[in-house]
Image (cartoon, rainbow, N blue to C red; front, side, top):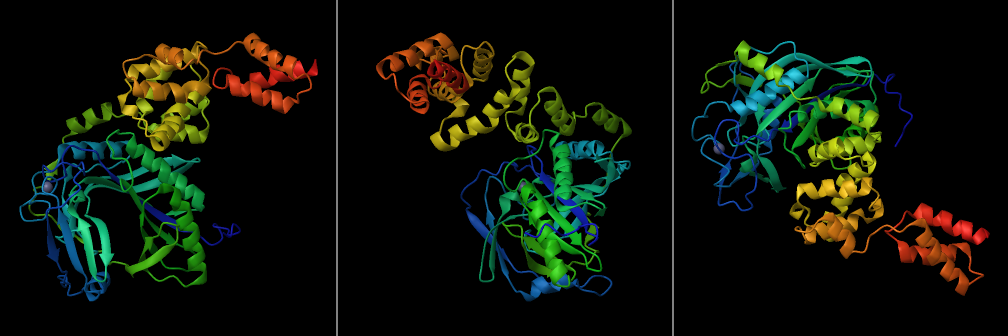
Length: 486
Ligand SMILES: [Zn+2]
């Protein structure tokens, strides 16, 4: 990849649009659960789309384009997770208050100066077939926000609460299949203003900070598809190109790099492109016109009281970005480890352990981010069988030097197999009591007495095979070196 592009001189401009699913009990306008567990669908509905001219007599070029493709849309129905509201056969119920409060918290966390006193639900036209009704409901909950980044002010123009669309399952020869259990799951969408003077890596960092602010609410879904980003990219003398569906944050900087390179080679047309797995993009359709909203008349405007907003302000969670800084300064975690533990499902357990136990924070964080992940993936260890208090015991043993860090994986495996046993049982059963330096010296000396001319590497290897997991390997190295010198 060409690293020589000067993004300032090509006048890179970008706008970010982040979508994060909320982990509420119910969907946004019905009582369906937001947990998408169902594996089998029991029926399907099939629809075609048609273009209708607006009251101004114009038809949207993007809608025309999709219509001419003449595709047929199939929608999978999962009875426990899709109701009549979800398929637009019954009017929407009232707006989910739990979702609304989370979205308002996001608006407050992102310093929105304007929170509407009256909310108006709108319908946004969707032309890619991902909803059987051809629209998505959306409501603006905040405007004129900002976040700080490297001493600069990053404008957040708008925060909306909206319902998710169906998820694409497959596309084959003019037939597109979507699963409808995702439809109606609440999302917050955050739009930044035009960002100028930043390179691809910085744009990715900005997206990360915005994402982390949303996750500060503790009410967001995790996993693939739970967070998705769209982006507008343009360079000097070029047109604005919209890139949709960047599923992983780590791809964002690559998408910008590839898109700038592409726009430097080809003259960019206003169009919507889709992000590929490798960061390149593909043409989807012409850019939509801007008049894509109309009021949802089934839902009356909703008033947010001053008092309610004040209550939300008082109970605002600590922004995770502050926590991240605290982890780095107080616990001396590396940037990447601090980020990993922040994203981890063990975040709150890590914090509780650090409050009570004087173990090395890097070892504790590493246990939750790498060791456990490895044990689950490679050895299918059932971590959920381990009681939470066992982790406190484990790190107390480590802090008291009753075990060494190398034995942590073995102990965790044992605890998952024998949930009723404690850490001291594991140490005893697995014979993991740490060896003292003099015990190791004795082992090395007995080998030396049999093989007086043994080389350092060989002796070290034999000693390690006998003491692995019971003493730090650096210490073994020192002991063996001192004996060889003699
Ligand atoms: Zn429903």
